[in-house]
Image (cartoon, rainbow, N blue to C red; front, side, top):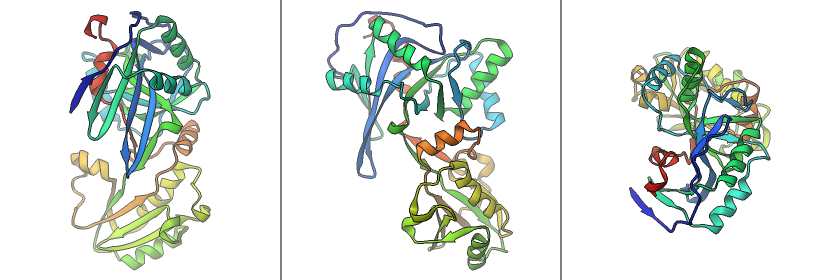
Length: 334
């Protein structure tokens, strides 16, 4: 990891906490940039704190996938005695998000600090100008709703802690526009039993309403021992993006659960990070790659209250814990 300091503009110190959900000690304009699949991508947003306790502001934070109740309770217990430093990730489709203003700052000024982690550059400009920070915070608090891209369990724990005790720990957050976000789908992994038959399973998928197609039009790619097959949802013709991200997962999960040749189905992320899913035999697996839904489709689906399965997707270009201390660092630390 490389950490370096570049030139710093003279600024006015202002430790400001507004009467609102989004608060700041030192506001950071945050940019994450790097290459994904040989293509350069840059995501610009705002890093600050979100405080559930300031509940009179009506900004709505909506989840897009399900959570694990036990994990939420674990985090809630932790939050009673320890601050959460791992930043959450929020996106919005609102036209009020000041993307052009943020971009102009990065065009005009060099970053205060930058850090290179896993091939991505995380850079921020520390804003201490009172008037400008108030404008940005006011802008964020005027946005009607946000979707949780990453940090579902932390937000759920914060909400539950506030419900139980009337106060809660503020959460560090990175906020950007949906046009700046990238998402990938985790594979589904199914453990087979003796009843599994490749050709019978493909017939079952067709009977479940999925259509065999070419790879360029696929919503799902099925992989097993060097064999592969491509399927799409019936009303997803010509490779058009499916508009309901939950139905995209519901179709394939229903097909998998109604086939007798499987003993278990889980997200690859759950298998890698959760011991209770390790019983899925890695040598006897069928893997389903799912076409990632668009961020816009996920956002619109989340607003309806529909939720994706746990650990079904992963947002790329996430903020990192390394920069959280700078949010509340005293002036003299710079």
